[in-house]
Length: 234
Image (cartoon, rainbow, N blue to C red; front, side, top):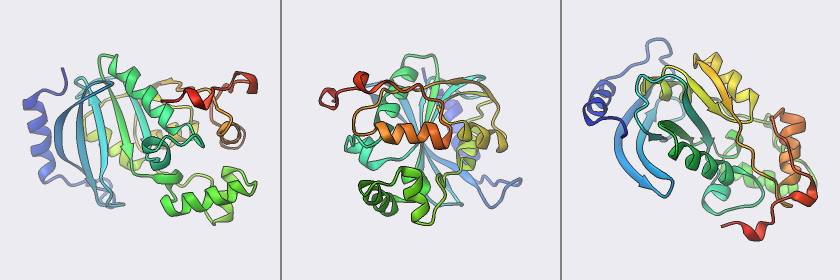
């Protein structure tokens, strides 16, 4: 069972004229909520508008999370090449699928899908960064050559989305300690961490090692001989 119809209707009604008095420069509203049966289980999808980046973000909700504590939450940043096309240059698609499958088997949980392509630098610059990586730069160096920080993402909108769904505390599904700190700075109560470890393949091994070495991601990377064979990917 997901968010009950009367609760969903009340949330949508509340958001019709919602303002964010504590942070008026970032106002987030839930605009629509519908059932979404998936291959990973029964979900509902909530569509969000916001006044900050004016992008449409999504929450994929399994079970009734309204007012709940210790809700498992995956905050996933958009990756067109990985999520949609199955690129082997990153582990984004694998983390997304892993999170959806695990949450689909739990009592409740949420996957927030944020439109923060390329660690927040956008699709065009992400592909420019790929070009630089083809020439030998790692992911952090490529961003810096383009004039960006290693990671330009921000999770204030995610914090607002969780607040809109009235989630009281979360178990964050991540390997990224910076994401946890950012969420806490924006008022999200984190009561636990659920690792999402995907074995590297020969195309993304250097990328994942850079995440561990330079960005502090909490990864236990497999040895090269134990890497996943890309031919086995769906």
